[in-house]
Image 1 (cartoon, one colour):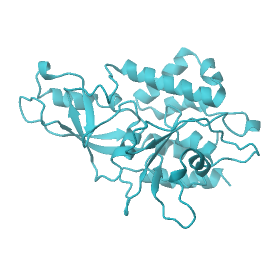
Image 2 (cartoon, rainbow, N blue to C red):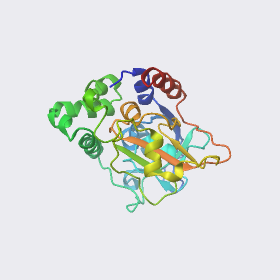
Image 3 (cartoon, rainbow, N blue to C red):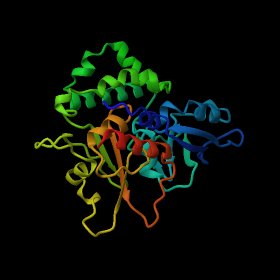
Image 4 (cartoon, helix red, strand yellow):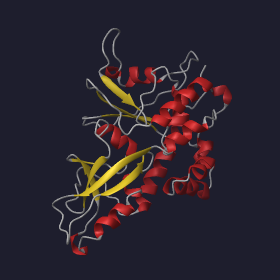
Length: 298
């Protein structure tokens, strides 16, 4: 893969200022103060909120505590979606810090998966990596790895260790030069206010004629309403990691550099407003993305 390490670092270290407040219906022994945290975009809510849980447990009785879950403005937040995807889908136009409500009762079984331990998160994460590698390399890379290599990927994410993670993840981003890219691009397109979880189909980074497919090519085939016709105003905002890449950006380059640690390219979309502000976006990533694109993609 092209070595645009600034882009990789800015993706990894993207953060969202967040304020956690306890639901007013929870029974407490004294008033619960809010808890503030910088959430990593590439991680999962249940993986990085141990401090949040400990903070609120200080004012609660053990018998009043069940499984912790989160919601934003009435919407339960799916822990198995990356944090950045949750923010982009539900709160991209909110004023920071992102205000998340914490619950310890009435778990919404119809909306959320249970997450009793970090081992559940690890299993979900590794399953996604294996699915992505099946698309990219027919599972050849991940199958050639040893168990300790899989554990290194997981521990890198769990402990927020960029170098530890990428020392192993780099293997998953390689491909034979003569092939020009992965077999298929692992991607998911999420639509705000849609009942459909996401769009995921087979899509190659290179056309049958040998041309590099772009983000625009992907959207035109998978989500055509997101592409305005000539002369029409833009109706949809399409973002990755809180920024809006150019539609001309090669899909292979995006997959190598803007995929989440699970190796999927997570693309969020919603109907645009008259004034759209990408609060909680990633200005450092925007800068390095443009540098990386100009250096890597003539």
